Length: 306
Image 1: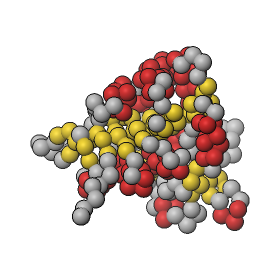
Image 2 (image 1 turned 120 degrees about the horizontal axis):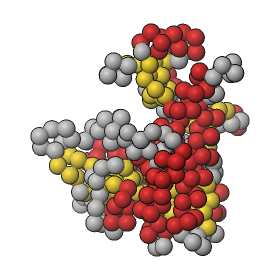
Image 3 (image 1 turned 45 degrees about the horizontal axis):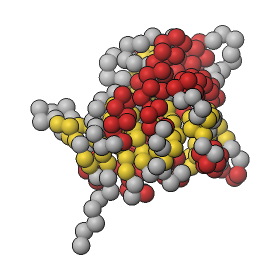
């Protein structure tokens, strides 16, 4: 079976962790340990988040006096793909002796006229006091938004992924028996207008990019790993309960928040609705059990009527 695994942001940095290199090296061993058993039985493509790492680099490049302007997000995404890809590839190499592993920097093509470019909404970097955030908005041309906790964030566009530029390369690597790490942070966000690749100061949601890649690779299973054991029905209410089984329509009807389960639910729904294959959402440490139906939330096609 061909499985695309989408690792959440907790893969390298747990809540409250300092973003130190040694912390991430330690945490990535947990990742490799969790998914290595699946590699013995299935062909794997591993995608990953980059939120904390991207935010750290964005903050550093914003205040660096040696730069006339901060690095754009396409270059920062490429940097984080390389760093995190290397950590994952090394940990998987050690956990799977004899297994070919390759980390690939990939580019996600989006539409230049995507409406998201006119409605930046994804927070990047640290929270700033109001006055400083508005100063950055004036001098850097940033879009900013209040975070609901008294702070202000830079917000950037998050357009929908149209295709992963290196899909055929990933396909060839899988055919040679290689476990592929790619599409980190949703991939480097580029437009392909008029046949020329152009970088963008935007980010692609990592889970939606994983769903797009899984569909184009004709994967059998999309496994979205996070820090909770299940999707929950009636989340945040007294009637909250684990959702063990759902269709794309049922997931979308849950109206999960964009900053929590929303993108994961939509990614699973898109993949299942577009392919008729299966997806699941659950905890990182239960990866093997989720694929074998013993944990997580299984997302299956709607049953035909008639």
